[in-house]
Length: 623
Image (cartoon, rainbow, N blue to C red; front, side):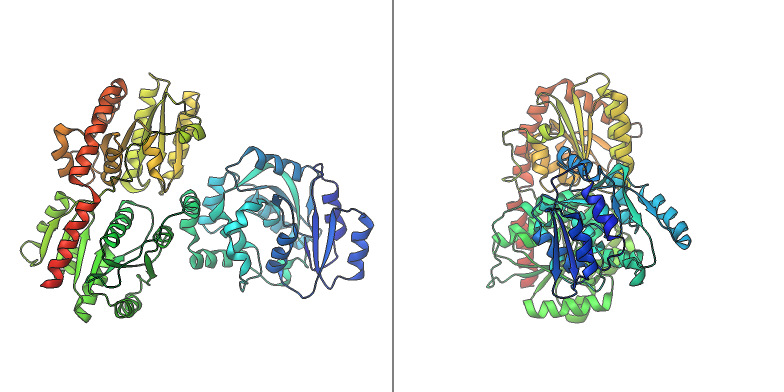
């Protein structure tokens, strides 16, 4: 409890002393404490209360850091000296965190109150906002929309969340805890107990009023500055990254290939995953690689593996070009490998200005003719990841392109994605029986693929009514995630069991493949699952094209598993039949899995794909 005034202090400390939970300590921090503060604290005569005199006026954040370092408890509260905690507050919050290990922080509902009539309307608004958002999804969503749905002193925080939080070592220009909360949200979610456990006092001498602070303005700026939007959306992914221990890669400084991989952003998706795996394979084969992007949550993954990454202002063209030219000179780059639209535009412009050779990988069917004409004409080579993408390119450029055009599939690390038997920890954590049939749908939950997830859930309900030992896991992030969570909750209620789990994005997708019986997906997901010997129902943006098998492997490759081409499954009949077929015939799933891995090794193994790309680099540089 940092103190700037003794006003209301007695009420605040008394509220702590009246807690039904007795195992607490109260650390009061004050700069040059007045005699009055000493008198107030000493009258309580409680050994659990410690008054710490600060040598200098540290400010709110540094005072918090000092108190945290002095504290001994597993759970931390930063209490306002003018507010009141109700008697059961600490007991209920401790119990909640003890019973919900997956939750990092717990808040509560509040009652904002005042004796000043000019603050009565403000109190009503505070109560309305603070008591509206309760679930972690709603709280996350409120933050992402620029609202501030949590009063910091209402939060009980697991001490462990501070282990990776460097914000306490920096002094921002804004003396408030918003940055602490936003950084803590990377490490763990916040939930609320649906009870009023905290009285929040508003008065003229309150900290925000004295310092004329508008939290909403700073909140928006903090999101822009710290790129926290993705950190919150991909919290579980981030937590997995933090715990990873990997051997760092070292690029060969003497390589004749000095390649700058230019990527729009490094978020979560098939394209970014492919670039990551390709980069690792290229470095292992002796290619010097540097990554330039506008950043993103997956940037940490590249850095963790020792891959050089640089930030560029990709949305400000002139600034991006200046930054890239400086990077090209320092790193002695002799080839640009461009991915996605803005990077393609920059690659074409760098070639015009500085005559640096570039090639482009086209990752899907989302390129317009205008974009392809503007960016690809001068490229030394174009890589299409599938035959439909190649055909799109040829239709757009006709005979204008004079470089090399090759179809090179996305490669799969078949040594990472392989069948391994082990304890079924995912099933145990989710409460799924070991003998259950588990269906995994893995994809972005936005655009058309979010609609596919909804179709999967709809068909799952039909099938699970006939078989009560079937479960479904939906993995991914996107703007449809919230509606998919609601749909899953409604289906679980109607089925009278938690049959569907919506888990967001995960880094270690492999574990989920290995504990699933069949996988629904497209593109990279389909290939990774096949490599793990899992039966796959190919369902992409175009629609469901059915079970992947030896008989239809060329068709599946030619439509890229329903993501780049194919006939739309208008009534979802293919999806229904495919699910029923594989659930009824588990032996067929095993056969398909064994065949699928052999096909992946033969056609999509990352080593072979990387060798093709290195040959292409060589042909470009020698020309």
